[in-house]
Length: 345
Image 1 (cartoon, rainbow, N blue to C red):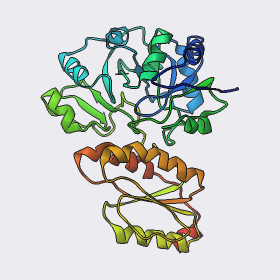
Image 2: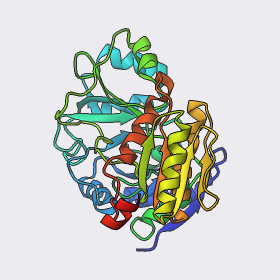
Image 3: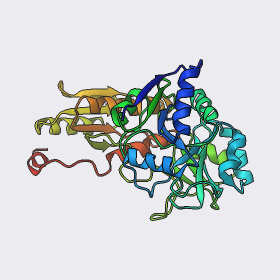
Image 4: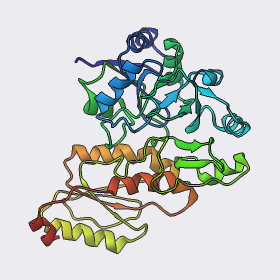
């Protein structure tokens, strides 16, 4: 399959590019497009066959539901039913923006969008190009991140092309994403509400608007939310996660892996001394700025062929919840090396 590459200024969208992308989507094809969080892989939310193509392109198990993206807030009743007052308060505060609400679904939403469940994740993106495209399509789009399953989410069109080029119909290039990690996901059908995924919006901020505390998912509970696989947002390299501020530990691990002969990289906030042949990327000490650059840094290190990535965990505070979740999942079940390398390390 040839993937069309359509460049479009978010502030002055090219009518021809938008019309082309919208026509492909209405025809049941897949189009990647920018949101403020990450690039999404869009399909008509009410077209079961088109949605199935999303799972095939990503290699995504059908047990992982998709988030439905809207162009306007008043579209929500097309996909969701029995919207509680709590949801309305949260939408007033955070729509459009990086928040997904889990609501009771309308009957017309295909089962493969919701992994067979009776709830649906709904989001109103804050990116002007995303909403222009969805409006041109005239229908909501089901859109997970535009990458292969469990791999690092894309924050540029180039990331999408590298991962899904030849597997999808088109990519709408609207420049880099401004938030950089996926939306927070809150289930408002439970009492108390369940925060399934943290984002740049902290639990404390969301609870303040909701006027009540949230619960976290019970272990083993069926997830109505994406992003719950233990290993997720993961580069190809082995990721070793060390505590925030552990400069000596970071330097020690780098030295040991260098002795094992591995191609090394490090991702830190703290200033450290890395081996001369290791790639060191220092990210900002402010949570939102770090989140904006995280996935781009992981893509860069993958492109350089790093085998081992030593990462400093983010600070343990409310503002960093979303970043800490992404780093923890990226490090889970990292690739193992052969016994000889393990012994040398």
